Image (tube, rainbow, N blue to C red; front, side, top):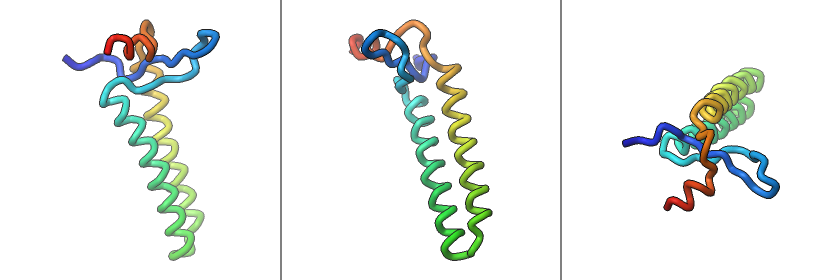
Length: 94
């Protein structure tokens, strides 16, 4: 049975939330997709700017990929996070 949560809260120090950590393959896929969108957008911007003299189009493509990647990550981190357990709880379970 698949875990219904993709992320767990990460608590450190005084106990306040410091972010989310992926706990399933879906969470890791969302993080990887965000990173790939940023890298692809940067490469497209670089190549269009250097070889086609279309830096403005490269910037637009980069911004669109960044918005899509970040939007997906923010949606998943907000809706697929375990409200009860922290990352430490999942690590203790093994």
